[in-house]
Image (cartoon, rainbow, N blue to C red; front, top):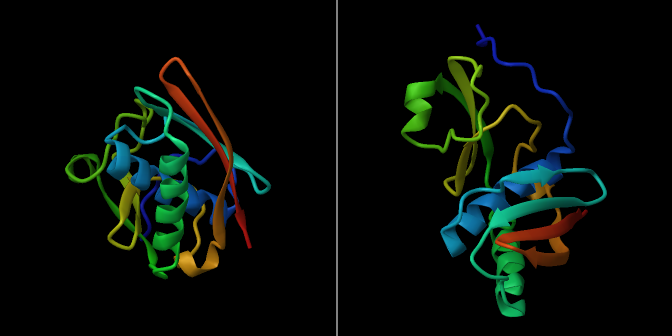
Length: 152
């Protein structure tokens, strides 16, 4: 029997939403920052905001794009598992979840690269994503906003 979870409030485009997971994990690994604090994921283009002490250099922006595409090229399986909040807290950041979140959480894994509590729609394998492309970015008072899309 599948657990009863909180209802999801929107329907993402699976390739973009899965790319967001990879981008988040890449930012955490490269900059030691938290996952995106604000994200707007759409089919045509998306944006994410990260808390950083300074604007990434052009070289760092190119490295982010290259790292995300390298992970996509690994053809990693995207899997789902269910666990209690306590079990999930040991492996993922739960700070962005609402207070009334269900006791059972849905953890989405992108191979061994990322794990995140998420109720959204995802591809089954990173081979379904396409090419990740950073369109633009800006920095304002500790917030780095990156706009991106996937080419498919």
